[in-house]
Amino acid sequence: MRTLTIPRPDDWHVHLRDGAMLASVAPFSAGFGRILAMPNLVPPVDTAAAARAYRARIAATGAPFAPLLATYLTDRTDPDDLEAGFRAGDLVAVKWYPAGATTHSDRGVTDVRHVAAVLERMAAIGLPLLVHGEVTDRRVDIFDRERVFLETILGPLLDRLPALRCVVEHATTRDAVAFVRSRPNTAATITPHHLWWNRNALFEGGLRPHAYCLPVLKREEDRQALRAAATGGDPRFFAGTDSAPHPVHKKEADCGCAGVFCAPTAIAAYAQVFDEEQALDRLGGFLSQHGAAFYRLPVSAETVQIEERAWTPPECIAIEGGTVRVFLGGETLRWAVSG
Ligand code: NCD
Ligand code: ZN
Image (tube, rainbow, N blue to C red; front, top):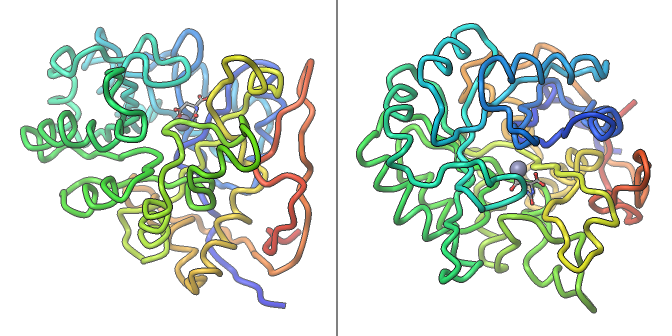
């Protein structure tokens, strides 16, 4: 049996939600030492004080990871509040959701010009900007929205503010990989599901709402570019699961929610991808080192063991009033976290 010992992984992009859902899903991120919780609650976590309060609610679940917070950028974000929160450790990053791009993004940025002063301050103090990089223009094909965002919005912004530290969250395209490689101070998170599936998964024998997430799955050539980026050892690419739980009844609906709940299987899925790419020696970099370096935090002093062992994750987990489907639930995985 092959085993691997790596520093405890971190998840640099996860939706833990709030209330009863938070209590139900937080334990499934227990394989990670630190998690960066996304702020798209209702109402959004859009001030340092809100971040502090949300962090306390996450910690109160007793889940065995250290929660880190990103606040939600709005047209009215106060740069002084961000700077004070960053210096106090209440937030480690700021998340830019273009208004209307995804779940609970309606309070997001309507025009990059509205946040110019905030972004300048962030560049000056080294506070990272995390980007949901999709344009919302309905005339742009949904499969092109990431590329067009990078070309028309983020690229020009970083030309003006090259010192801005930026993460292209849940990168899904070959274009995003090339964008990150071509720019200083820029990184990307990559999800397990975008490494696993291409867009055919959405239509495999019928319509598959549980493969629907945003940014939507892309072509096989994009998946291959993501796999090369994740497994290639480049420190600009690191793990962010984008685990995004929604109740089954809200996904299997006339207008189903976007999001894949991958927290329970993410580490195993990443390990299997790295094994398939003959890059297991680089798994620790991607899961445990590159993100910490980007966020200027120490690599975990704890280790975890990952072993080659077949197991079948449950299809669903129970939540209050329903269930949530698990990414790869019911399938046989080849790697597992020991213990
Ligand atoms: C996320 C969610 O449900 O909060 N959904 C998703 O498909 N990834 C939002 C997001 O990260 O876009
Ligand atoms: Zn997300």
